[in-house]
Amino acid sequence: MNATQPQRQSFIRAFSLVEMMACVSIIGIIAFMAIPSVTRMRGDSERNLAIARAEALNLAQASFMQVRGRTQAALDWAAASSSDSKYALLRPYLSFSETTLTAYLPSGYTITFAPSITSMTKVALNSPTGIIYY
Image (cartoon, rainbow, N blue to C red):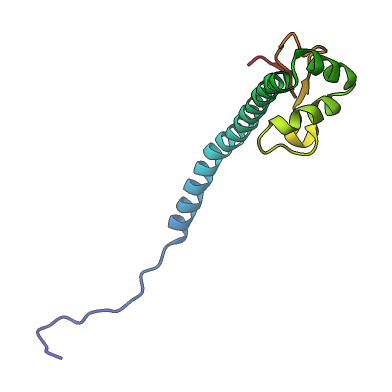
């Protein structure tokens, strides 16, 4: 080595404990702020899915009446005693329908069909927190 050149010290630069704790606390703060937003978005998406499915059932009712005719549709609808049997009548008129009404709607949501199909009343959508007017 040349005597005029200073010697380079080789050492490994590492994170100190304080720097690591600062990183972990920043990540914790970000997670603390993000988790409520994610859960709220999930609840909103389930609500929107339930509304979309209720609207699809309303359109299926209209198609059912158009295909079968007003009188025959009213007779078939009156003969269907439960919501599941009414859903079975509407299933051919739905895209991507599940086998049961419970599987068709998101968890915690229920619908109530009108007693008469000729009135063309929307299905009533009930959420875990109450009735949804859509």
